[in-house]
Amino acid sequence: MQTRPLGKTGLHLPILSFGASSLGQEFRPVTLEEALRSVRVALELGLTFIDTSPFYGRGMSEVLLGVALRGIPRDRYLLGTKLGRYDLAHFDFSARRVVESVDVSLHRLGTDHLDILLCHDIEFVQMQQIVDETLPALRRVREQGKVRFLGVSGYPLKIFKFILDQTDLDVILSYNQYTLQNTRLADELVPYLKSKDVGVMNAGPFAARLLTNAPLPNWHKEPENVRAACRRAADLCANRGVDIAKLAIQFSTANADITTTIAGSANPDNIRKWAEWIAEPLDTQLLGEVLAVLAPVKNIGHVEGLPKNN
Image 1 (cartoon, rainbow, N blue to C red):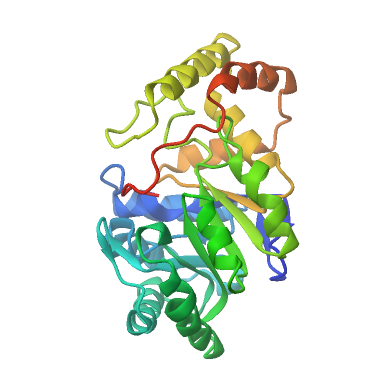
Image 2: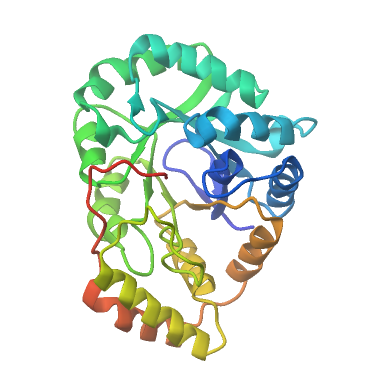
């Protein structure tokens, strides 16, 4: 698996990383066997950075991930989790909860340190607290050796500049903002992040199934014109004998300015398929035709500020 450097951290992440939200049964019931096999297959295929959160499954993702990682040498993978969001509408970015959250996550995950720790979905709180209270508390935790690198995650791109205009970060995690349909992350933010030497992580290459042939979840928020355009793009790919999901994950992992793209599944067959797809050449002719279909809805996103699973 190809790797890229993550900002100035010194870490090299695979271009495709494993998102463990599915282990928290965010999308469907998951058996223990599925969880264990998914993690093992991901590591075997080179998806050696794993992203999770105490929000995913309200702790279940971290617990099952910790079970799956037992017996695997710690230097075989890089591990990231988050803090601050613990339920759909429960947020706590206080300094006291920072210390508690890190310790609980370390216990669940069965490790003595986290490679990356992110403040999760900060757009739902008063973001000045992240600058004034949360990140200073995290830096004290980092001095204890429990965390190596710090960052924030969320959907609106403006949140990252709000934080970085006031303080330093090692990394950011953006989701659904670098896909076949939406390239705002690269268009609007990457130059600024590069000027700050901040590592860039992208999640959601399939835009919550929008760029797949699977039915959309009930909580999907994209407007109907975006959904319709994506259906036309999927049909175009199908007529060429290609799954649009293949083109989507190839596209998202191809940008050299984005260190890694995070995708998650509790189905080992999906993970194997993704690894095979990104090892194949990108069909540039088909890509151009798909981008033309999506051009009328390019960079149209869902309404910001609503609770979501990410």
